[in-house]
Amino acid sequence: MKVAVLMGSDSDWPILKPAVEILKQFGIESEVVVASAHRTPAKVREFVLSAPDKGIGVFLVAAGAAAHLAGVVASYTTLPVIGVPINATPLNGMDALLSTVQMPSGIPVATMAINGAKNAAIFAVQIFAVSDKDLADKLADYRSKMMQDVEKKAARVAAQL
Image 1 (cartoon, rainbow, N blue to C red):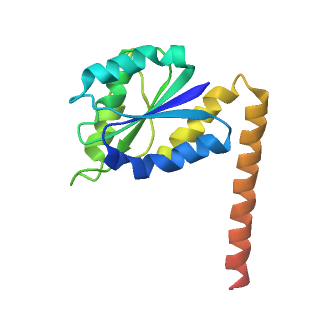
Image 2: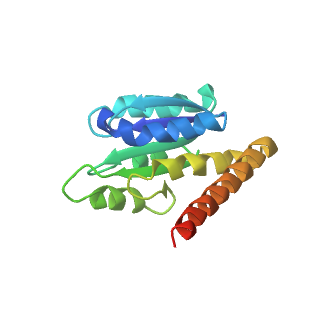
Image 3: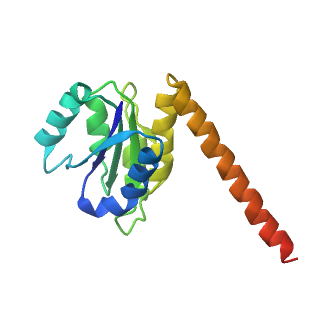
């Protein structure tokens, strides 16, 4: 399975690049696309409708401002859509957050924090791990390493007291 990573603008790439790196770390392929819900709607529709034939199982979708991209993607598919609101305006991403999270009943978008692309990638891994034991094991190891990293940080602080 692959994750489709869609962004409304190339300016979103610095936020999404770490998500693609996390997916690679777990051995999950991604297909990265720049497409706008408002400026290139036909491209968005065509990509989403062709995604199952490409082995795509999850969409990770980021957009700022009006941030309709994740909702538009969700309207064309029953595959999971994970929305990442981007801080791209003077409203500090709140506009994008509300546009992404306030989906109508029946067309869900799992919405992450503003600029929360890393969690979106981990959530995609969790979705795939439900039916892939090896991936579930890798995810458990990832969590264990995070715990060890926190303990090392705690020890460094304790050493300074």
